[in-house]
Image 1 (tube, rainbow over the protein chains, first blue to last red):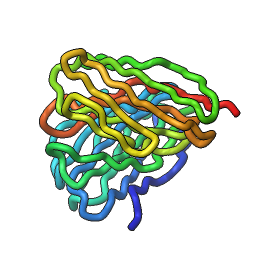
Image 2 (cartoon, helix red, strand yellow):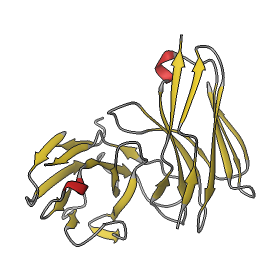
Image 3 (cartoon, chains in turn blue, red):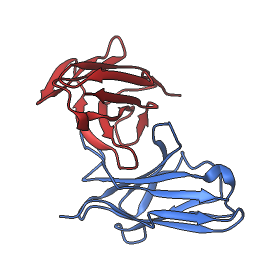
Length: 115
Length: 110
């Protein structure tokens, strides 16, 4: 079975542009998470979905960031008016559920560079 | 807020043992995870502790003391492939998100 996949693997964009990052979770996993990892740091939580709904978006840094998961599977993280400070690796993770002990399985990430 | 501390770097010799400490102060606690991350790759799960004590899994062991807000990851019989970053993460509530430390980069020398 395939793991979590993310596309693109690398994205270079100009400041002010709009970008979309895609995550395909492991089939059957109901919980999906987005994290952001800057160089030399651990992943930082952005948003969590249980099914189609965003159960917690408290980690999104501002209203330029938005994420959707319309059919409870694939998720897209959208960033408007990108800034140089948005440059980071964006990681997606999924798990079979969200309660008790559930390991989160991470994808390889999308490296976003804003020039 | 969450505060999770771990050393930045450690170096050890092939075949030796290394212990990576992690201390945490979080608003709640529902488990501590250790992940391994090779450069440019996704974090991969190593261990999970929710009760005090030692969990052993092959060459890797993890220990937790909830009263002290302390965990360690023990890597035995080090191999060159163990050179990686090791991330301590705390689940601080009865659901989902993980709060990560900055990671400890372990370098294994021949």
